Image (spheres, rainbow, N blue to C red):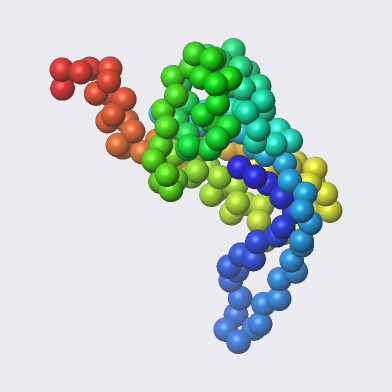
Length: 166
């Protein structure tokens, strides 16, 4: 997820007839959030990076492999398909183009955006702290992660892999 200081206008509640004025911010400063979601266990793991280049993805994958994560489901971004990524030996499950509904991490990204967008931040570090706090709160509630990302079809698919006779 690219996190930047270009603010997004969000819908807000207001009394009928009251004009809402939202301040916006335009600063081309970004940081990237690499996120792993286990919707069945209700766990998340994240790493911050300066970019989405293959070197950053490999660094994150190595850290996650040390934590016991060896299967990655993701989109077809160039940094996800590189030889250095494949050389790590993890199981890589690629998604079809334009299918964020198949990626559990996208639901967590939506929750992050709902939490932090529509506000102004002095620096990218301030916005990163807001996201970090949200992720810490989220990781403390596995049931909420399961609701966000533990879809029934994923549970059924994994159950069928564990028990191929059914």
